[in-house]
Image: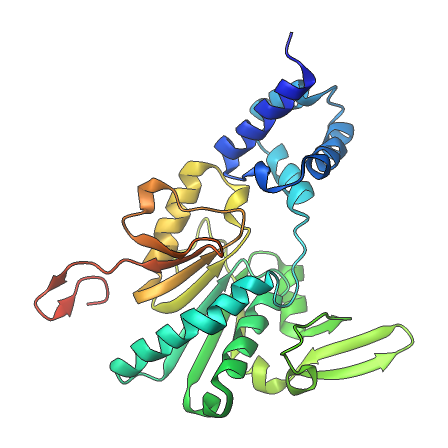
Length: 286
């Protein structure tokens, strides 16, 4: 007879094996509460019963991961990631660009949902560059497969935002207060740097020649084999020695470690490993 505690442990291990979500990052009581929602919804009698359900019906993972991760997007989500981008990644990238006399920076926010991440990275670059922002051509692509999310993203209007203290809301948003709350509309200067496109990451060829690719809290919805293919494809969309930013719950498996190296493991920021040079050329970008 398998005890409830052992069944819970088995379930956590199965979630990690099948979807790569490390349940140990969550407090146990929180995790049990979130899983209990799915137990009730599916009629499972316990963790072992639910574990068997997952084996028979892998589609249930979509509902389970939504419940566990509470996949709420917001501006500057995971502030430590954006701070590391500001303090370390962006300065490195600017220096690398200047060595090849380039002033263009291309960023892809893959799985951008309703647009907050795409706008956040555009704002971050503008704020970091400061008075030199006009000297750089920063372009951001936000992609998602959900039409409703993309409609919100293109409208660029949000309610009651909580922005970092160092971000001047009035500089990047038109702020309107009413009895129903405060409305923030992304200013045209930012919107002009960001475009949105419907892309199914499982079917489309990856976009090419990006300096930074953000794909956060997307991979956890897929099995390990698909995750590996995803990361390979995302790595192929990065040029030079650019960067891949994953979600806090996601990791790069050993099968792709030869093309990506973790430069800031805590923040899940990776850098593309350059291919061996042949003379003065570079194999990856021609």
